[in-house]
Length: 120
Length: 355
Image (cartoon, rainbow over all chains, first blue to last red; front, side, top):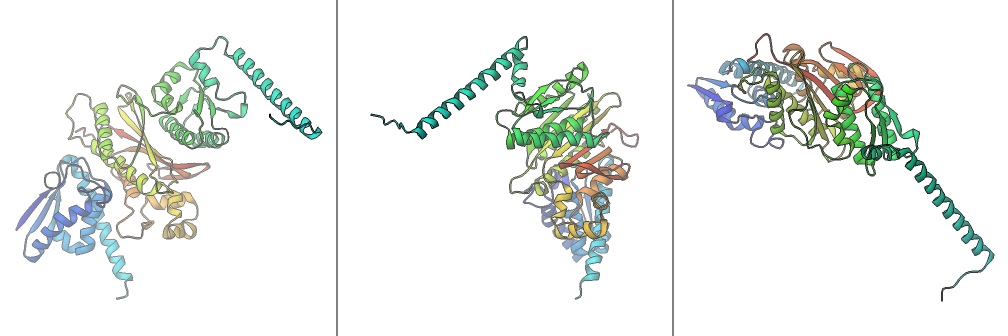
């Protein structure tokens, strides 16, 4: 199964901030919970990949990218997510792809740190 | 019939009161005579500014000839500090800008922001009396900047893109405004070309959006949201747009100091405020909220500037620290800026690619 999500057409052309309280309807949390997570759960139950296209938007505040993709890493683990998730974008949005990948790596570090210091 | 007290004490009281009243009236007549003399030959508009200071030299603040925040931050912050203290004390001040020859966008925007806030807090009728620069170029530029509107205590209405410099005061998180600003910047940098697919226009949108969020969530010490200011100017010689974002809240250092984890790091690990701000921008300080994944805004601003090269010359002034992100230089200031100022330049090209 191969699924593709274009943020501009499937979610919003103007991505908001981290939580719905800050920017209702366009936040990274809503994008993760309502769009990414159901598809990812479905893919992980079987086989397949998820491609997220970041082109066509006004731009991505870092808190949106962190909550959407970093949050996914914290929930499912970096290896699991990076195996099935592919981020793409056109020339003008390549910088957002790079940034989202960096934030995912950073979230992996935080997840490992948390595991290391959790006694149970 | 009205009863009149004829005791000695009552007569003395009435006499003293009459004397004081006569003295006060005479003082007012003297002041009015002097004022009318000083007004002779002065235009009506100029007279209004002269009434602010009354005859108090303490209320006059002389602006230095080179009024540049980026090159002489301590001097500019000293002026801003004077405006706050004297504005608080007297309710109005006179800005003597006659000797001003050079100024930069951050300096004039911070003057507007601090002046406006001081006016709102302490001003009676108007905060500023202004003696405009004698230098014709500086005079024309400063009048075009929208600074005059704020000095008269009302919101600016001239935000047309015709102006070379524009300052705007807003509140809350406004993505539409960030988008509008991105469009204006795109129009300046690529006039006559189709909008939307530029490599850099969305960087303005996201950077300003993130700064608005920081102001909205962290700047205010009360429940009320701090207002923020944006000013931009197009440098046609090198085809770059410079943008200044200011909030007059508590500042990054003060905001982080209030959080237990960050405050502890500052005290025991980083030491000075300058080193601490460096740690914050390098992502070495965990989020002040303690929630995983938070605290990405400021490190990303540095990445946008230094690692990705999407914006140039980013400078951050907050509390007693000035940070030049490109040079990775973090220095302590003698004067304190109560708020956060972010300055950056948007180039027309990125890695040789225009669009």
